[in-house]
Length: 201
Length: 201
DNA sequence: GGGCGAAAGCAAAGATAATTGCTTTAGGGA
DNA sequence: TCCCTAAAGCAATTATCTTTGCTTTCGCCC
Image (cartoon, rainbow over all chains, first blue to last red; front, side, top):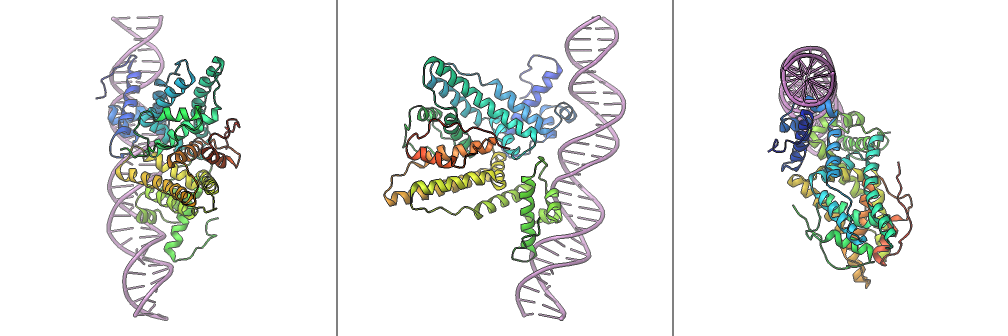
């Protein structure tokens, strides 16, 4: 289940991707087993030493996996309208939060909490990345003549709910949830009703 | 700084509170030092064995500290008005998220992420607790004749932003931030402007 | 005040993770 | 094709955390 995607590059690249996949697999796995370096190494069919030498620490490896996966699948949307862009972006954010790399991010963020300087910096970096994406979407809309909301409103009322519900495992089942959040921000209070709180395994 | 509050009770209670304080202290501390059982024990002036025997695992101890601290300082507000209650509640939530026990909660939530059954249950418990508080506030308001918003709106647009910003260390400096969130939910979109994104150490 | 049970301390052993020196292998370039 | 370097593998060491058996201390109750 691991060597199925040989990926280009030499041995180094092969090991790297095997390790990355092992992390994701272990993270997705049922029992809350510890995701330790030796465990990752075994799953990847690699020597633990190789991991320590290449990444230094377990945290660094997890961070690498998280940002790599996150950057792989988040092209900035360009639908031509503010609503379309934001909806697409929010939907992508929601789904990535539910996948292993998103949970890695959440873990990394929470673990670094008061935090060392570099942890602090990593948090800021991720925040800046999110904010930067939104910012570009809003700027483009403004250039187009639309009247975009403040970036803080988007952070607070679109990203905020998504992170909250991801953390609590209480993301609504309804796929249009991110879109609803976007619409509320764009057109004042849309939905007052619509209970969607529900746990999902 | 530790034996300053002798607390009632015998030796058992003394050890318990010393350990709790040690956890909070280590967590608040600068360098992202590992909060390990031996470290906690040393800080508390206690033998590691005592901790292992009493709490079993590090996670159980952290969870115990978190819920204890959280329950200590969150009486349900009762100001007589919906706005007052929500504001007071949101303000308390925001400040607890910035303190060590709040960060413990965030860590615990994130760490348990996909999670074992009991982790899942712990997450649900905390969510239910938050939701229960809000629910009672809203119900009281309804009984008073006010027209409270849907509970999901409060979760999404008050708690959501607070958790997001706590996670990213980007809580606005302005003390009225929680109140603004509440007002937006209660009276449609209040503030469109007012940039308040900022990092704080 | 003296004894009794529960909890803490101590020390040693057991596991597991992290480090390190050295050897081996794979791939790219002369 | 043959080196030559960078990375991986291996084995042995070291450092931690965790567990366990036993002794000691504390504090409540008779």
